Image (tube, rainbow, N blue to C red; front, side, top):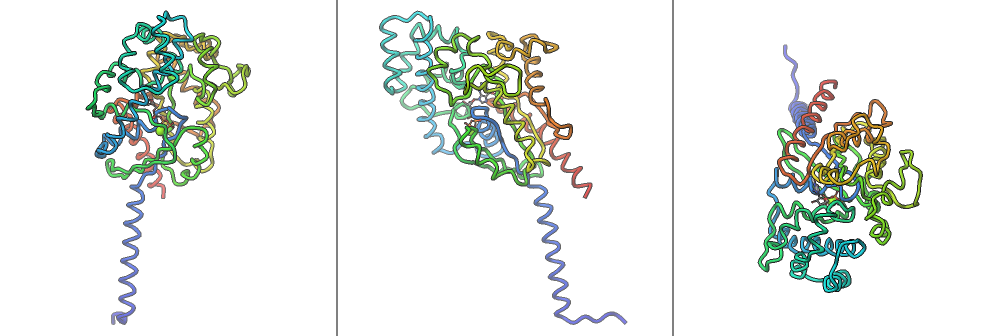
Length: 376
Ligand SMILES: Nc1nc2c(ncn2[C@@H]2O[C@H](COP(=O)(O)OP(=O)(O)OP(=O)(O)O)[C@@H](O)[C@H]2O)c(=O)[nH]1
Ligand SMILES: [Mg+2]
């Protein structure tokens, strides 16, 4: 004789089954949710990666963002030209009295983009772009915006997607986007890299599937941006004076307190994050960014002028592959064996390059997650 159950019990069983199915479905969905954190010092290229994801996997930029970008891009250029004028006036570049006066006015007073468009024709500016493009105080975006100045200066200028990708806007606070990638939903979190912003990072360290740490390889001849600029303008034309001043990890002694090499800062920051207990089980991706600018700089500057240890490096020529290998070794040095990292060279302002590298990373992350799942 079969077991007779009364109606309330059958209802309870059905309800239990429904709840279990729901929990299973939620677990499956959660496994497909991936939290990724973009970390790195300021100006390393984190937000540029986010912009590329928006272009690749979302709808790109909306109308309001494009209109706001007109102002931001023009300001990027005006600020860059103020710096450039300062560098020229502290250099041995020949400047006519009229040019000198105009450069001083540019530094003192905020001028509009049309004025910059005329200043760009000055002999001293042209000479600057021939001789000093690798100067540590020249913002990276100007290499892109300088040849496009005429287009940007016209009254009815509308920024292109490419313009928005190159635009520089320091991140304050935390921004995130969410998009579908293969079978996964990726939540990508972008934070500000400035020192004052870093204390906010810890709030996002829980449940992180992957940390994408970005480093600008081109920052090897730069010092951290919080430093007094007057010193840098005067000294940075002489690269020997401006070489590594503080290397907390390396052998060079502290020569000027407060002057920290930006690549060193990036390595130190990476190590402190890699060893953070909350991120013990996260995958670590290291994006060695700005490979284009690194190549440009290495054609004019010896890497070993800034990192004397490089002279002893096996392949110590001044080539991109060798220098990149050395930089990667700086990140790996002293890490515990289980602290594995997946490193890749990247040029974040090239959409296809980001798409490719991100795909490689995801292959690693998802394959590893699959392993983790199968152990359960
Ligand atoms: N040439 C070149 N420029 C790049 C590359 N990646 C980023 N940039 C530029 O570097 C500048 C800084 O990039 P962001 O993405 O704003 O840097 P960030 O890490 O978000 O900086 P914070 O928000 O201050 O933390 C921008 O002007 C970018 O266009 C690259 O691979 N090559
Ligand atoms: Mg940013």
